[in-house]
Length: 101
Picture (cartoon, rainbow, N blue to C red):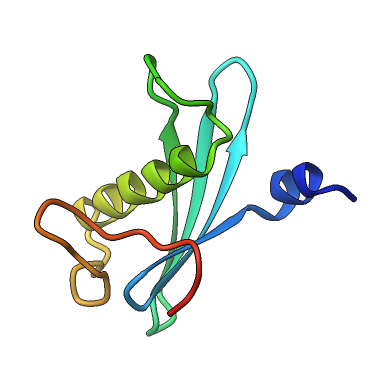
């Protein structure tokens, strides 16, 4: 299994504070990211984030996965998941990391 196939099947890991995420790109008629969010207390949620209509970067680039993870955290918080207590922030939004701290 090559790295692209592995990414398609298992997703790409992303982290924010104590939150772990897996981002999977589903390409098709509607390109979208399925982001599985796991909080340290065991709460989980999967959020579907559509790919932006006017992307300046490739939809399978590391930055696109970061952007999808950031959007998923915002949507999950709006839906009532206690993201703010566990996420890492900077002055403008959630901080998304590609490796666990």
